[in-house]
Picture (cartoon, rainbow, N blue to C red):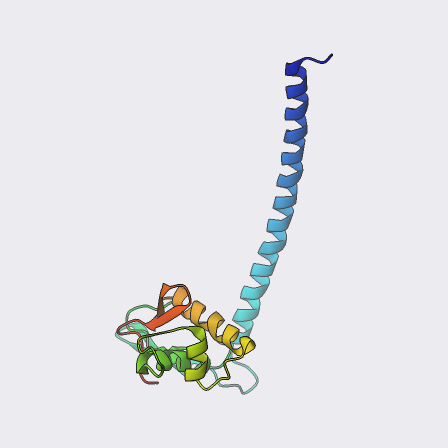
Length: 164
């Protein structure tokens, strides 16, 4: 009959081998993930470059800081909000969401859920449209443009909106 210590050592070795295999898989998965991050960032940089007669965002500088972007185009990156940054730096879809929340066009002025926001910007409240609005609103909240005090309820932050 094998000893208890022998059995424990055997199981410890098996567990260690499993950890080693999982760590190797994790390193491999992280390398793949990093390649996708680099690819996405590279594509974003390429798309942000002037090209092909498309409208190119032009940064207007006030007091040494970017104040607004003239000609923000659909698909442009949502910048992190900072003092002095104007909502015109946002792509038109994002500006519409900001305007809807600032003007309070909805049954709950001040805070709206994604279905209400979709209706406020003129979209049908079907799941596909509502999820698109949710994605944009979450992105605006994550970058400091909107507040999400409760999950799914978005509101404008004082001083960050404005009629565009």
